Structure formats: structure tokens, C-alpha cells
Length: 342
Image (cartoon, rainbow, N blue to C red):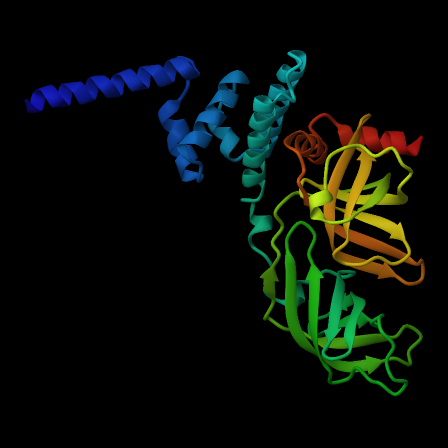
């Protein structure tokens, strides 16, 4: 009886292995592929999807999909080219399939050390890093690192709500927030060592600290742009939709874009919590993104507001179009820059 059970198990395993090999090609390195995939944190369903991509693109080293962004980009591009040739890129099933591939790509990229190591000390802050200073009971001020020295940070004189004429920052305890490019947001507390208000170029000296707290870790890749856009005010979140508007809207500039949000520059002041629709073109067709204004950076001198928008209800099709641009799969960024310069 024991021999019979063992034979059945062996036969079933061999049959399953043959089915898998047939599904992926006779030379597909199944054991290595699935072992490496599990080590990289992918589940069985995800691995089957990636196996399909590896087979379709005839990859010599299928396991490279688990660590090579370049290989993933080539493979995703290959899938899209095939779907376009069949006129089926944006059918529900295919749009969802491509969307999952983008999710895998994001997972691989955000596993890179630069997204996970983070900062521990203010001594590592780069010159010209923009910061927001909160003075308890008074308000929030904009500043930046002028020079980061071993004993202290020299920062530009804070700009914000008016202060008493005899006010001095010296010995003041402050809270500081900054966003580090391609990383995350950070918060720390420090104390102002000295106030050089009377200099030709007023600055403050702030103490260093090793108490940086990392927060708001980036969830998606964002790219800088500088293109015209139209912005429309919506009543609330429930009014968000993906229909193109034909009215003039408010003229604005799209400053950066990602799958889950954008930054828009508009004239005048704006309010946090506004729900808006943004209409723009990354290629030769218009796109729509609705979202809520989560933050505002106001430039008093230019009377302009930079709106930080968190997307609401982006369709799979629109998200895929945005991600194709963000990852520059077909050279869209170069084409956009070339068109803008003409």
C-alpha cells in the first residue's frame, strides 16, 4: 500500500512538472525560477504571471525579472507592442494584465537600497534641500539648507507669517519637515544656535540631530514635467469622473506626475481639501486625473500656488498610460521635451 501511494505521488508530481514545462517551454528553468521568485517575495499567482511574460519574450535568463528593471521594462514593452498589434491593449482583461506587470515593476524598483536605507542624521542633508519649519504657536515657515557643516546647519532665513520686529530665532526650538527626492518625508526637532538677521544674506545656524523620523515613504515613481494643463473644480469626491471637459477651465502647469498624483502650479492662492479635475496630454491624446489637494506651497513673490494632488479613481487604462510615460517605455519623455521646445 505504501509503495502504491508513493508511486501515485511520484506520478502526479511528474505529471504536474511536465505540464508546467509544456506551459513555459521545454527548456524553461522551472525550479530555479520559482525558487528565486519565492526568495524575492513573489507568490505563486504572481510567479505564473511573470512566467508567462518570460516565455512570451523568450528571455534567456527568466529570473532576471526578479531584479532587473531594464529587463522588466523590455518585457512590458514587448507585451504592449503585441497587444497594440492586435488592437487589444485596452480591453478589460489586457489592461488589468499590464497593470499587474507595472505593479511588479514597482515592487522591484522600490526594493532597491536607495528607497529603503533612508537618513538617520541631519549631517547627511544635501545643500539646497528645502525644509518647512514649524514654530509652535506661531506658524510654518519655508527655508532651505544653505551649507551643511560638521558642527551645524546654515539655513536661509525663514519666510512665512510676520513676526514681531524684535523677534529673534536664537535658542528657539523648532520642528522641521522635508521631503527627500526619490525617498520619503522626514521630521525632526532641533534648536537654533544663532540668528544672523543683520547680515547682507540673513541666515540661521541650527544644531544637528540624529533623531530623524522617516515618514510618508514614497509609494510610486514620480517624474518632473513642465506642460500646460487645465484644472476644473469639483463639488466633492463623488463628482470625480474620467470624462473629458470641453470648457476652458483654469490654465495651469503640470509640474510632476505619477500614477497616484500630480503637482500643479496655478496663479493665486488655493485651499487644502479642494477636489479638482486636471486635464493634460503626455502624448498625443488627452488624459484626465481627478484628485484632492493635500498640500500647497505658496510663492508670495509670484503669487502662485503649487498644488500637491492625491489622485482619486484613476482608471486602469489611464493609469497604464501614465505609467508608460513615467517609465519612459517608448521614449515618451524625450518626445514630450522635444515637442515642448519647438
